[in-house]
Image (cartoon, rainbow, N blue to C red; front, side, top):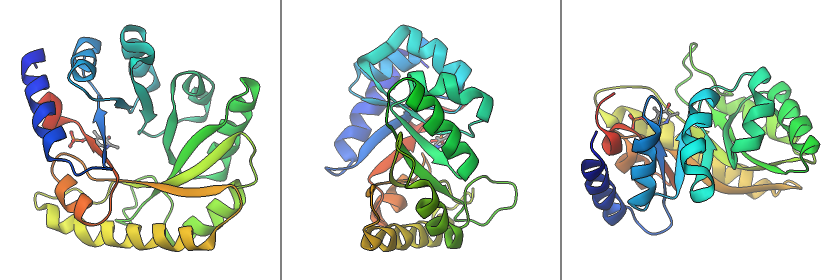
Length: 220
Ligand SMILES: *Cc1c(COP(=O)(O)O)cnc(C)c1O
């Protein structure tokens, strides 16, 4: 998509989002130049699904953006990921958390992470089931070079965004419950929910991070 169109889309979205809701530009399959256009239009956070794509965009954009990892992170990509990303939104197992902790320690970083919740209970999707989130958070809270800062969910894909609402409601409830536990070294600040078709519903249900791709960059 042309830089002008990307910029117009971003102006519209930033005008629409309520204060306190952060826009993450989901950049999968976009060219580094498109990512740069988004930054120049006022987006401050880029979401990447693939470490390889992030390396290319990061080469052009660098520290002008904050970088969130929003895809499925393979253990062998963690070492590279911790050098680029400011947050990993998709932690769903103790093994992945331990690898992030280990690689972050090696570079003297504390990596902010969100716990990915499989709120739609879909067998093919990643994420921890809502009922297993507390145990995972308790288990990884002890890791010194990783900091749990909230929850992320994708929810079921459907033509009707209302179909995602119950999943957003459940994830928000879980978020509030985890916050009330006041677990040591866990800080429940961020609730990342909603994509181009569902962000309005997600914001109504308490999201303070939305991840938009096609609404910004056009259809993939
Ligand atoms: C692709 C993607 C998005 C953005 O999806 P759009 O429908 O293009 O807005 C958001 N979150 C995740 C995890 C994604 O993979």
